[in-house]
Each structure stands twice: as structure tokens, then as C-alpha cells.
Length: 122
Image (cartoon, rainbow, N blue to C red; front, side):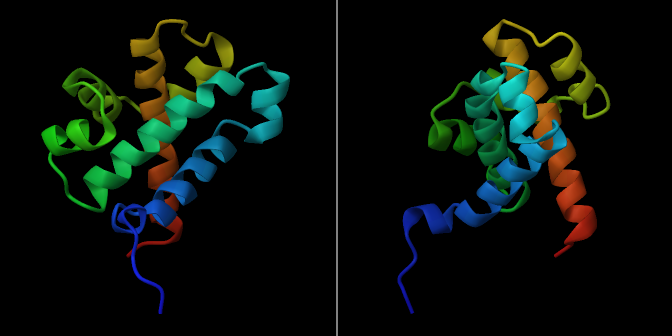
């Protein structure tokens, strides 16, 4: 059996599953490409890491901020983002400001997380 890497310990498989689900949630990779929104991928990946570290690893916001290398404001934004309006906000009028993008990406990733949990509970 192969040894666990640091990434495995951080839930790499769960992060990737959530990231892919978040892409699917916004209409798939084709939708991101055709809508010229490929620049959203880093925000969706970051939000996926934050959510998995909180939900699966039960890390504190401070620990997550240190581990991911972002501010507490970013962590709070991602974790408090509403899921209800996230998709519409991304599709209709994607925000330009980084803080707003993190907030919307957090909502999308949280929505994807809820969907994953509904279909694959622990």
C-alpha cells in the first residue's frame, strides 16, 4: 500500500470531486469556455479546498487560512456565501472584484458540496 502524501491527508480526492462537481454545477467546462469564464477555475478550486478542510477535516477558519494561504476575510466569505443565488450571479453578471468572485465561488462550491452530500452521504 502506498504511503499517504500531505495532499492525501488534506482530502485531495474529496477536493477534486468537489471541484469537478462545482464545474458541473455551473454548466460544465464547455459553459465556462464558451462564456469566457475560465478565470473562475482558481476561485472554484480555492473554495473547494476551503470547504473540504472545514466540512471533512473540521479545521478552524484560522487553520484553513494558514494552510490555504489566504486571509480570514476570504475564508469567511467562502463559508458564508449563499448557495441560492450563486449560479445566477455567475451566469448573469459575473463580478470583477476578487472578493466578490471568492464569495460567488464559495456559494457555487457550497451548492456542489450539498449535492455531493445528498448523493454520497458518509
